[in-house]
Amino acid sequence: MTGTNLTCLGCGYQTDTVECLEHPGATVKPGNLSICLNCGLLYKWDGQNWQRFTERERQKLSKEAQAWIAHLEDLRKIVIIDDLSFLQRHRKK
Image 1 (cartoon, one colour):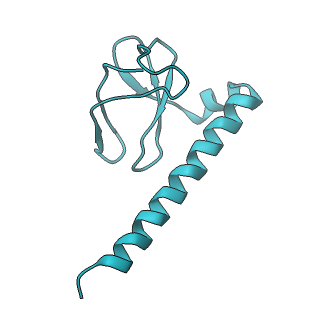
Image 2 (cartoon, one colour; image 1 turned 60 degrees about the horizontal axis):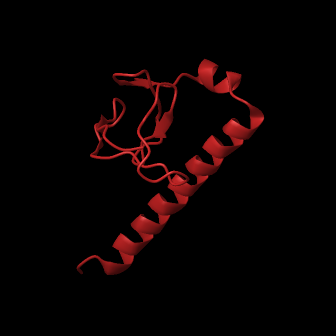
Image 3 (cartoon, helix red, strand yellow; image 1 turned 30 degrees about the vertical axis):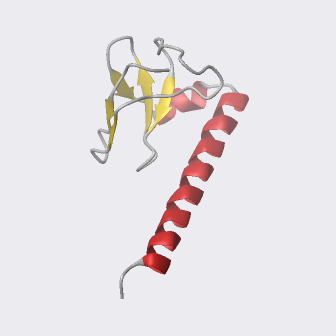
């Protein structure tokens, strides 16, 4: 999904693009979800803006969708831990 900027309401992290790995170049559609890569906050596109995706909405998703979100959250944690580890190994002494 491309063409929509996202500034996280939780941490202020700015993303200048939103990508769909399964469909490169696809445009964002109402109901699509996104996740902040910095803090993990979930968002849903309402057709004009990104809105926080509530825990109640998340619980209404299919088990498969919930599993994908959990997987993305796990991957995000791995990337953050790896980034911190890299920075610690390479910081100037």
